[in-house]
Image (cartoon, rainbow, N blue to C red):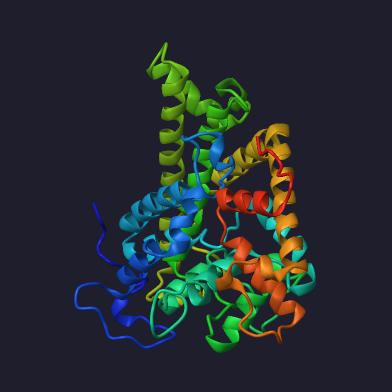
Length: 398
């Protein structure tokens, strides 16, 4: 059952607006329109053929970036409903969070970051912002989707502040500085990078963790990278599997795995609700601004569950993401991206006509970034098609 909206929830009637002023909708809230614009975007449709862990042709039942985003949205809405938050904003952020991912998942991101190292590198979070503010061309009066301030803020800051109040990058950005796309946009449209994001954004972020913990386990089992017995080396998973076996003796492994996924998701959601309720009770924020200006996130796992969840991530990193079979495919995928970037850079005329420079007077940095934007928008399938068009031999991603 949905809780009534809380004072700390984002209120669409009090949105800070959009970069370009538009008339209000007669039938949808500001945040519902944002969510609908994400769903109808070209970038969202392309997630269908972008890698989560396994390249699209390895099997029809593995997660893609699209199915992962839908699963994140389902978990995020469930949390938002119970916490009395704005479900539309939460869903918009959950659906948008991976729009900037390039083909081949994190392998593609590593390759593009290397290719663009002399021009600010590549960051998928910054690329998501670039997609929704510039690269989508669907409206006559502006580029991008013209999303609300609250949605743009949540896209950029869902993992926490990017700078301190003086504007000095913090956390993962302290060594290399802010990504180019975020820094440039923020100078024109201040997203208050020094503060935390809304509770809706925090919920979308933790829903992402819950989804890929449970569903990467399911995909890893389906791929034969590990077994249910292997998972029992992780204490919390051992407890859940033991409870399933006690309740359903003799159950086949397919159903045991499905039940493990359901129970793990329920377990993690319960932990988030418990800890978040305690933090909200202690702080008693009276507005979204009180949430943003707090010195720590308010949406979190309980300490015990956070430790257990970290162990699940370690298991997946060692037994799935670094599995020799996966690593072999990802190394070949990285080479595909590097080859494409080098070819377009040496011969920009090989780019599709809509991606050619509008004028001949283009800097090296602008060319590199334009190529990066083109490749980042590719699906796995299209990247391989382009590679076969331009090269005599294309790696087999199997």
